[in-house]
Image 1: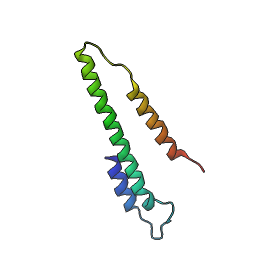
Image 2: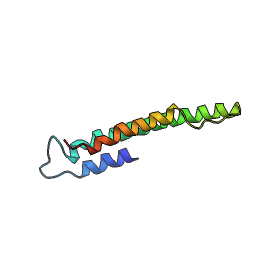
Image 3: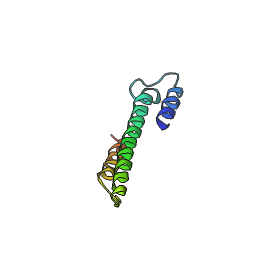
Image 4: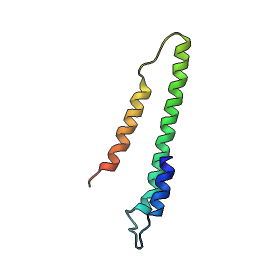
Amino acid sequence: MIGVTVAQLFRLQHAPNPNNIFGFYILGKPLACLCQACAIYSLALGAYRVWRQQHAMVRGKAIAGGFEIFLLGLGVFVVCPLGFRSD
């Protein structure tokens, strides 16, 4: 939902003479696509984790950690610094 909101709000915020290289109007679609990609990535990891947890419960075990948590944290670490670049 954030991807759709970002796309619509950034497209609405169109200045009379916008910056053609770096501005809200130009960055709206790529940022929205990035949000949607992150959502799909999180959904896929979550679905796999639930599937793995269900199979572990059938065997009488529980999964407390795993590579899914690491991959999700790595994804957040990779995406978040993009907004804080100062060059």
